Image (cartoon, rainbow, N blue to C red; front, side):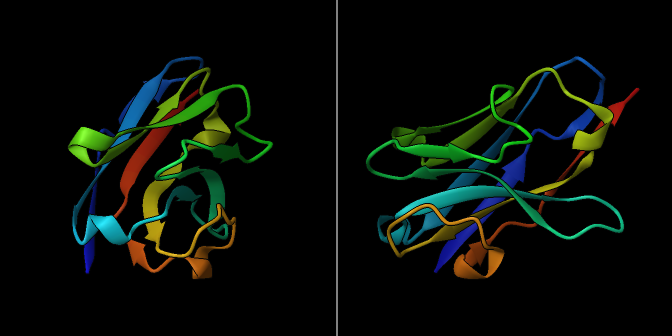
Length: 124
């Protein structure tokens, strides 16, 4: 099993920055890809960014490209999502997810493990 714990959410003004973290534990050697998803009230969960655990390839949703950066610290088994130039529409619960099969995918049901999520609120 893999456990994922997010942290770093909070309240920030529009145009500001925030970094959320996802710490992985357990059978981390089985992880090939880790992704960030978000879900706003009344909306479906959507893919934000993903990173291959070993090759450092990353992929972003068009809505966050150029503003968000996903990175990882292998020594800490932690993946970060740096969010800059935040907009009110970025307000959501951000969750990290991991999967063992290779390849970054944007569909939530392809990920096997999920964290509990962290709230990010952007005030306008």
